[in-house]
Amino acid sequence: MPPEAFRPRPARLVGFVGNLGLAAVGVYLICEAPFAGASLIGAALVAYGLSANLIFAHELSHGAVVRNPFLKELIATICFAPVGMSALIWRLWHNRDHHGGSQIEGRDPDIPPTLRELRDNPLRAGFFRLPAVARSLIFFGAWPIYLTAHAFSLHVHYLKTELRGARFVLGFCEAFLTPLALAVGGWFLFDPHEFFLIYGAGFAGSNVVGMAYIATNHMLSPLNEINDPLRSTLTVRNWKLIERAHFNLGYHVEHHIFPTMSPAHGPLLRKLLLEHFPERYQELNHFRALYLLFKLPMLYATKTEQLDPPTSRRYGTAGFGLNELSSG
Image (tube, rainbow, N blue to C red; front, side, top):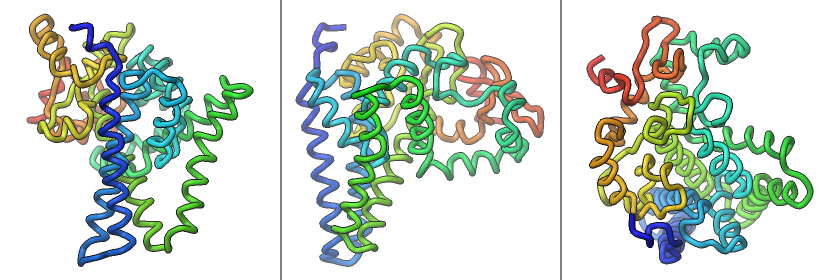
């Protein structure tokens, strides 16, 4: 890889500012409704602008855009606030623990449950007794709030176990007080219809788009004993326009190999990986990955197999028979 791949790219801030601008246009259309259907178009712009900036915050938090700590924290807080997430806790949860132990049971906070976990969790065990289609509908149906709910539980965990003093105050403010202040300010600034449309679109849209990548990038992959990005991570490909709009987040194998590399260089690294590791590199079309995710039970029986308890059917993961699901 060329040396410039590992240098910050502050020009990417243009995308962040542009997405804020689109969200602002969306707010204007919702509030002023200058023509029929303006509110719906406005809600779509708010959802797009804020969800794209949530993705941008992921790149920013790894130091791929700017290295200045204050600027990085400020911009990340702006991007994370609509879904109630802390930039500080995200770095502990995602940059340190997820990247440091991706798909390793007991180290990665984001993996689906394993079969032995059900013995200690009656509620989760009851969920997995439901038919597979019902479970998938519940899982996908929860996406408008899923990322925020998952973040809330992790924020409480890190605040209780790791953060002290000024870092506790910063994490608490970012996770709870900043989003609350944003919501309270919006409640007084907009009428109830405008408020729920603006905040609902931004909140739900960001959660859904975030989960569409988080789930497909990892939940189709096998578990690990060592941190091996070629095994634990899946790259998902979209139309070029979507890849650019979402800051190349789909190039996720590439990101896990070099987390601080700008995703702008993801396509180049993909080409090199296909040349050197064609038999190990895992990649799917994003829409197909979503389809396979719907069919997968998301309960690990072994490191390479997932299990549907009601039918006892086992499913392979990426690199271990996942593609056979398309005809199953």
